[in-house]
Amino acid sequence: MPDISINLAGIKFSNPTILASGILGVTKDSLKYVVKNGAGGCVIKSISKEERKGHNAPNMHAIEGGFMNAVGYSNPGLEKAKKEFTNLKDVGGPVIASIIGTDADEFAYMAENLLSEEFAAVEAVLSCPHTPGYGTLAGQGTPEATEEITKKVRAKTKLPLFIKVSPESQPIGEIAKAAEAAGADAISATNSMGPGIHLDIYAKKPILHFGMGGVSGPALRPIAARCVSDIYQSVKIPVIGIGGVTCGRDAIEMMLLGASAVQVGTAVYYRGAEVFKKITDEIEEYLKQEGFESVNDIIGIIHEKQWKNG
Amino acid sequence: MEKWINKLDKPLMMPITRRQKENENVDTFFFEHSINSQAGQFVMMWIPGVDEKPFSIAYDTGTELGLAVAKVGPFTEELFRLKVGDKVGIRGPYGKGFWKADGAKKVVMVGGGYGVAPLLNIAEELVQDEVDIHFINGARSKDLLLFQDRLNNLEAEIYTTTNDGSHGIKGLVTDPIKEILKKEKIDLVYICGPELMEKAVFDICEASGINCQISIERYMKCGMGVCGACAVDGTGEPMCIKGPVVDSKTVRGITEFGKYHRSGSGVKNNF
Image 1 (cartoon, each protein chain N blue to C red):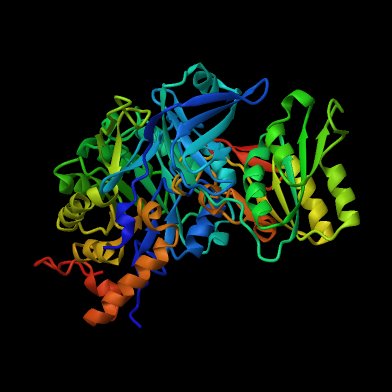
Image 2: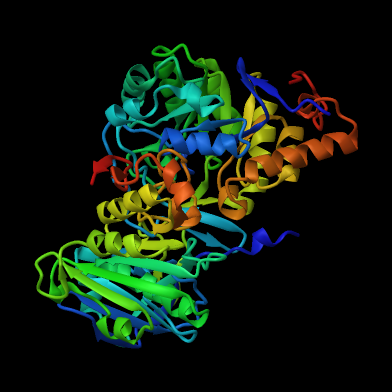
């Protein structure tokens, strides 16, 4: 049997499928449920300093070939989240915290106050496309903002630090370099793209209450794949491929392009929480067919310059 | 290509075709829509520019869908302003409904308040299979009782309780079920209502070793098992797809049942 475990930024995952932030992940027990369904690890739903109700519904809906959402970072806030995410070994796999902030100092505050040593890593999200005050709508998608936020979070935590970037931030290799220079341990690429608009032509209104939202799922995948490829060739730290990974083929594509692991989000809509087990089985099948002994052996191999293996 | 790629959950705009007053506070909104639902499933209703909320299905005739709605907050107040011909968006049906259980020949249904509608739907199916039904219908007072005509037309033993005694038996739904269980061997109990009522009935059934099907309502924001708002502690499963109807075995694993639920932001609120 091929080895499907991976080691990413010093964290051991039983397989390369990780729950992406914002899908399930509101509670510790929902993380447990995801790991039970085969995820190698999970990222919690992003936490802000104060409780946030989020946007009114509809918060999400499918489109032909993809998915749209504008949840608006609903979350219970820092203090309640600290109580929720304790005794994390119960989850059964590595748990990655996800933090957001309105500026670099708030990100630093979140890192200082939320992160217990129980978390395996922290992902700082600089890339939400649909929440005023946060992410790309707050200008966090530039190399300068990336560097400043990364540096300030880095100073407050010893945990491995992932920076989650937007597919709209281009050239994305420059964003990744800024994060790497400021002390990031990995790049999570990417978030949903957009914002995009999808109307109901009879209501004559966007379906999402916010009016626009992030586009994810299969429609995002080729763009996220190209971002992963660009980042892999720009920095020495690992890349986590995120964007429309729905089956084993998609995960393998991301890894061939340079991803050390993948995060899976919208696929939970398409194939249920069991999708983690399904993707892992499909990856294993491919490794057997193609004669690879380890999933680590496929990372980045389509690039000529293989100056980083696994 | 696998069929998952064809999933396309988004609201479909459709006109309200008629409205029916059920009691002081509840109207049923009808749509000419073949939704092909199971008893106990729900839909998401979108009022453009306002919000989108889950509603359990009260009527599904095959050609007509009816949603019984209580006027309780800003969304439903907005809905009550709409007239026949005005359009709203509907998506669904969602979730797992009540089911016919193998070998369940004598059953009890316990419905509190709005919980009566989904139970009536499964009861009307079970009657076709000649299942013996005791149907307990409870409300705080007479004017809050729902679907009395449908209940009276049902071939079942009907018990009505009101807290204030303004109609039927004065007391709680737990009173008649205790009496029934003393007299008869019951195979299955269907429960739908306020959670503390559900818990009280469930506890009685557990003590008597009787299996239940219970509809557990949580904050359902997406209905598609994605947002995680309705994930329950213990199992961690999202109730919008793994429920709302679950059996006793599942309920035993839900540690928050009868204790607390979470708000849209994930904050715990005690019942």
